[in-house]
Image (cartoon, rainbow, N blue to C red; front, side, top):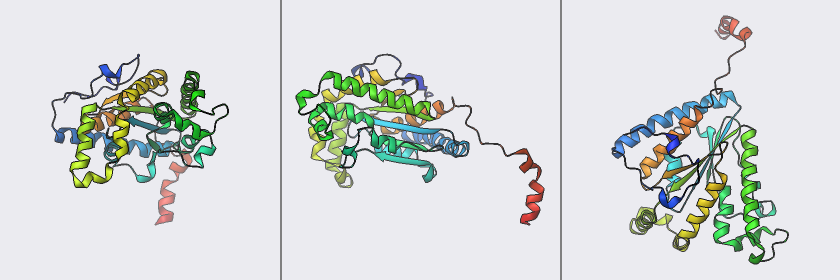
Length: 290
């Protein structure tokens, strides 16, 4: 299997999702992919231990994608070797009553990673320019000044939200949060097959929701708004990566490899050295313990 180059997936110019493949053709079977993933996730686990000791960076991994794009299983498989205390997963669903009493980014600030840890946003702050664009009536629940009906939600409103998201990501990046954003690029046909599997296989019944079919009717709208959001928020300090998601095993390896390669750029992440005076007294400490 050919090596994975993060630059092959990184958004650096304006993209059209329709022109980007949802399946990466590789000469590898599931065992090969699992073996490569296992090596990378073990290295990531070791890296997080060093990060914890270094205590200057947090890492924010943002996962977005259509229903059934494999976000949940990716989190399970990529981060399974981590110390549980070193990674926290946040799944942002419909805002609750407390969250609606604050601005839409408030709950995301609260979930940012501590120094030395990874945080994973399974669905992210981008839902506020995706789901709410497809269903603008949701904005009314935020009780915003000047927004009394859907007709008050202008194109300028969405432009402002994009700018706010860019400012949010710039702010956290400048304060020690390493941000990587992944769009799990699934084909509509593959989604159909995965939804059918939920209906046909009893062990997957619990995953099915009729709401998935309703959202599927808005497929083209979601693609349009994803494309627009990605193009307007792909920056060096918070890059987007488009990951072909029709092959779940390959998608997991791609994400893990990109995280690993990008983290190698932060060459200052090292275990702190002990004070020379402490080192000089090692023998004395040993004798005290003995």
